[in-house]
Length: 200
Image (cartoon, rainbow, N blue to C red; front, side, top):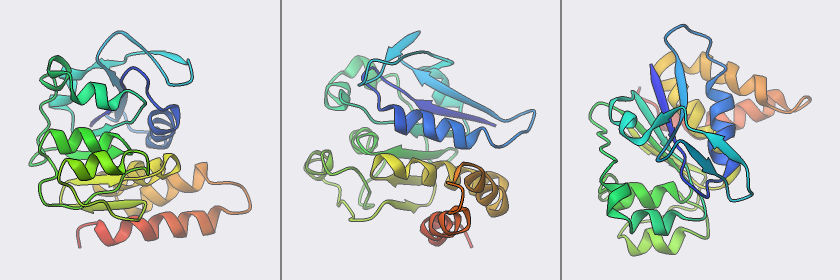
């Protein structure tokens, strides 16, 4: 199981790294989570440089993909050399997008008539791409999920865990990262957000 977190130049640390941390709560030999980047190193919107653990082309064969956000997303979607490296397929992959990552899914034609979530800054750009934007933190249909707001990234991670390892594993991962004294309430809220979008 390989989960690729697409992480571009100018990335938002909360989106990529919080999801990475939650997903790493699954401790299985075949469970792999990688920061998937267009270059060997990428630098965040706040100046944090990380090393790529996989490259964009590797996302084509990943079992699940999270498209992270950042301050350069509009430039990314306007760069064919980058967009052409992305070949995602919701018929065989779980695909999730965080904030401005939703714009990338829209430009790749992966949302169609499905409504989506994004952050307030990106909302008008996603609407310009012809996608209805919901006023909620998480939405999924089939194998595609979107989230809006940096701290909604655990919802995407939990959705992927629930879809692949079950709801108990997702709740346990969330419980580990939740604030002390708020764990039960946090897990109940988060699972309440994603549960309506899980297969029956």
